[in-house]
Amino acid sequence: MTNKRIVVISDLQVPYNHEGATNALIRFIKRIKPDALACVGDEADLPMVSRWEDGYRGEYSPAIQSDLDTTRGLLGAFRKALGADKPFTIVRSNHTDRLERYIERKAPAIASLRGLTYPELVGLKELDITWLNQMGEIAPGVLLAHGDEGSISQVSGMTGYKLMDATGKSVVCGHTHRQGLVWASKGFNGRLESRFALEVGHLMDMNKAHYLRPRGAANWQLGFGMLEVTGKHVTPYAVPMRPDGSFTWAGKTFD
Image (cartoon, rainbow, N blue to C red; front, top):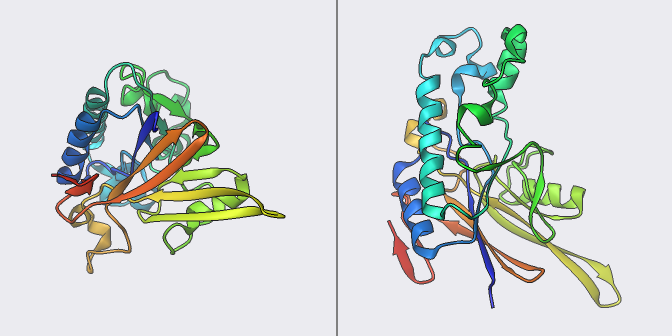
């Protein structure tokens, strides 16, 4: 009998998040009442402090506070849907690292000021969200990672597989925006130990991503992840979403 469910939120990339998918997932969380939430990171995009905008018009965008406020609001909505007393964990990611790296590169004199870190700016303490500075265990033998901790594969599931192989643990990650579930077993003489790698997809609206033009598409899959924990046994699921953000779980459609 399942005694714990963990919903794993994929890359939101605010302000490029898919509103339909985000809202459907929040309603889903309210409905099924999971025991915990985990986010693989990149909940904020922060393009204006990326190296891709360095010296270009985008660097001077005044939208950073608005984007951080929107991110905080969405995280607050997920916290409210989950409930006040259940674990909610976010792991660091390359996009949320951008702010610290920008300050180190452009304004190191203010790097030590309180209040300028990403967790502080989006109010993680006030929202009672645990921040992981590196990969950490969220279920027995299962690491929550962003996905950029190792080499990246263009094949769904294989970025997570490489992390699984390197760490010797099952891995749940994002970063690639792809969905994939890969298993591997090792052992001898009929005794095997199985591990999995789950890439959870993304929650981004590709129509908002100007950098995908002119094709406006990529090898990405809209969706999220689920872990069902029974004792020390963990069953992973990749939950795909339709283009409008709707999806089906246990025979019920959420939109």
